[in-house]
Image: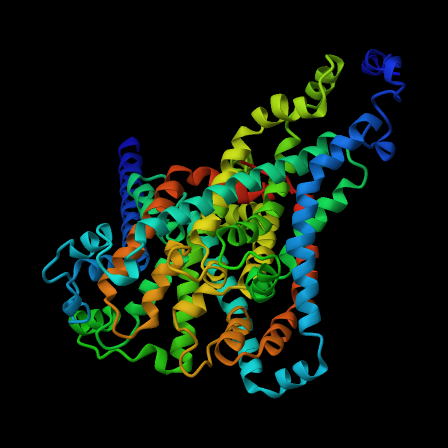
Length: 295
Length: 305
């Protein structure tokens, strides 16, 4: 009897094991499909960037004579679309950094006032902020273009910074207000008893305790500005005011452009955001989850 | 009076009210009003100069019955609307549904699936300009990587993707899904991780099978998140510019345009600023209720960082 049940158990276990292997195999095949799906355009980018100009559309699925010439050209700014490449790279960094800084400054000041100074009807302001997203940014590009020339900011990096700050702040205020709820009000109150002014509370209590949210939102604003194309194209027109994204799309002006240089530029342009995303991916995705599960 | 109130109440020097007030009377203290005003000035300035003014300007520019009449007379506008609708219905729902399923796949505790996730995130980490330029040249037709691969690996002559409306639209929508699915997968993964394990344990004790755990625990727990994501992603998609502009760039013959590229094309290619703006603004009856609904939903939920 005991022997029989042992045999039954063994075959049961074997069947279980076989099922496990089967599931594992299916998961692996599926994973392979996903890998190809995710990597195909990236591989295409690298393939073109490593090819010579004449060999770009020659019908090879692997680089025939892989070389880094395109990257060397970028490094030395050796093509006329890329003459100001490093200067433009600097422009992109400047616009990103300024957007990030101003978004943080303006949004923390607003959310501090609304939630810590207990502004009456403050929720109206934060809702008004979110209503910015009612009209998608791409629809406003043309009025923005006109308005910037009215303000005298045509072809000026500050016009792009203003646009990017405008679209980043509502989200920043939203995050700060929700995150700020975790900072106990008692801290403000005891600082007040010690005679602190709102400015001191803002700098000495509010900002330090908000630092995780500041990092997350600062990165968000930086990448928003770095990855943006439409506004930078509309608002910046000369080679020395352009950013990398505008310079990159310039290659499309001609049908005979060296696509290998373009793809190499695209790779160089993509490296900083990739590095930042991978370094801070936990913040980036979770920040947008908004704990919807608990809702 | 609570202890705290008694502690904070004696502040006669400034002659203020006791610190804790009933919630309906909460407001800044008299001495704070100037600070509050100073702190709010930058944002209110931004709001007026860069949100209110451009929107009023756009409404004023497009405030012209002729512009709307021209708009509705052009078939181009209706095609554009239809394409935008297609992007929302197929692109948004496709990306979110697949992301929801994939978030379960990536929760499998295995080392190589973790490694795969790192690669799978790449489309999201790439700037959309770089990604879509690559997709454009990949699908360019003869000599493009897709057709080369089809011919080399399967001996099939690939089509010229952007020469047919159906194929070009498919390319745009698939590119859009390719770009955004990883992001939503990460969002749903964070959502799944927030579900307490004891709920699953309790379900297992009650004898729930894997499928039952999925449909009676995971699905209801993530329903709210899924709804928020749908609203948010729909709003984004209605205004999306990069995908269409760089992948198909409207080919063939500007039939694959969406609302995001419409105003831009109308202005730059033909100089019809008013018509382009009027076209874009016809999306407002859809986006305003969506945004209001989203704001209400968001206020009821908590933020995780």
